[in-house]
Length: 276
Ligand SMILES: O=C(O)c1cc(=O)[nH]c(=O)n1[C@@H]1O[C@H](COP(=O)(O)O)[C@@H](O)[C@H]1O
Image 1 (tube, rainbow, N blue to C red):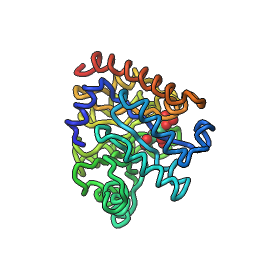
Image 2: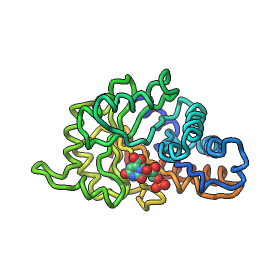
Image 3: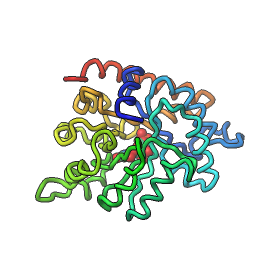
């Protein structure tokens, strides 16, 4: 999916919501456990309920890998179920020597090899250019590079001072030599709003994937006020606060309601902050 298409979907839906499919077999409603594929059944109903309110889905690969071959199968079926109108993110946080990264890239981007055809994958920048470039060899596919993550431990390395500023700033500067705003996004946690204005000066046009709203306590309004560009430039992820809004028979209905609430707020912020 191109930048323009993603932006068009954001305007059409009045939403920049990404629903995180962090589907944990230990947390889904017990009545689903009798299904042949409980994980897929859960995702299918969550997707049906949230589709009108979001522009993106982000399955976190850990939740599927942890179940072995069956988990990969549930992920495959989920990906086939998500309509092409929605931007898909393989949250895998990959990155290795070039030779190995090219196989990770095939895993998520080459349907003839793996069956998967994600729009993007999250990548850790730590191993540098040759660990990231193989993901960019696939046309129209995106790298979402970890910059300043939402967790406390993110400060252990990302905020370490270098002569040119904190390490995460170096990630933002150097990686712009690898790809532009049409192929690269950055992860900035919703818990990091104190640095968001500064981050915007370094990457004024890029989309930011912002997780940490909801269960981690980040503020949707603050992120939107500080981080929104004239073409939105934000994908805001919420996982647990949507998909586990209820663990009863009404789980999908409640997930839809949570997503709708966020979408309504987003519609207002798109009016209020875009182009400010
Ligand atoms: O790359 C991510 O998506 C990510 C980066 C980050 O800094 N913080 C973060 O929480 N995430 C992911 O975003 C999701 C957040 O989930 P909730 O806290 O349940 O909304 C999880 O899948 C995390 O793995």
